[in-house]
Length: 218
Image (cartoon, rainbow, N blue to C red; front, side, top):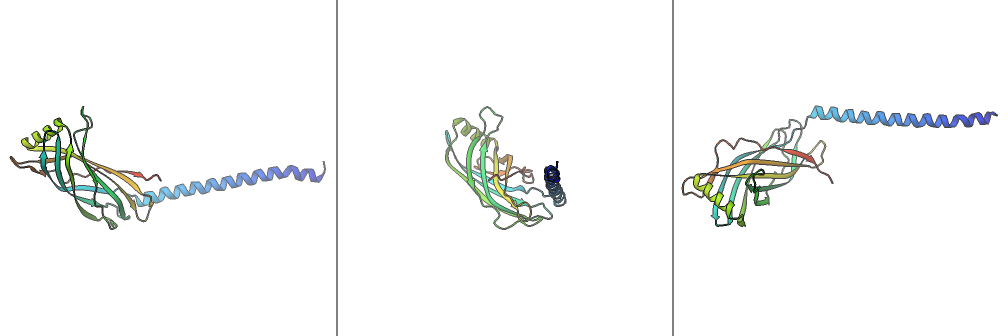
């Protein structure tokens, strides 16, 4: 075996060592990136936005044998609890249901519509007030639901469910759009005798929505 043969035998080993070294450097880089991301996440500690129901009324304009016409007038306070991050909103949708998920009938959709969202960036520890109306005209709900709502008004209390769906993002950190779903299940209104306009029941205005953030998948 000549010197040339020895050189040829060493080349595969050298290539293997170079390949292993490259893999090692890539692995170190990935680990360092992950560690830096986790450290930054812990340092910034992003907090999800919150909504509080401040005030609401409902006007039961018509509850016939099987149809339902009404208007909800809602005032929300949107809050950014983050001390370091600003939040911007892309969209907001409000939906009103009657009934419970666990009931035999389930929930009945009464109304849904896009509603105004904060147009300007919500800065750190800031609040903004949102007011909107949700209407439904001659919505078919069936005679059972119509009777329950009418009887509830006569007794002085009707409970709905208000759901919010929207998109927001942090403006300077992990700026992917995030979806949130928020539910206010005890959307209760009290009625005085003979009055078809109900006021949000006392003690509920300070309860926050539960926010469930999800990353946008595009």
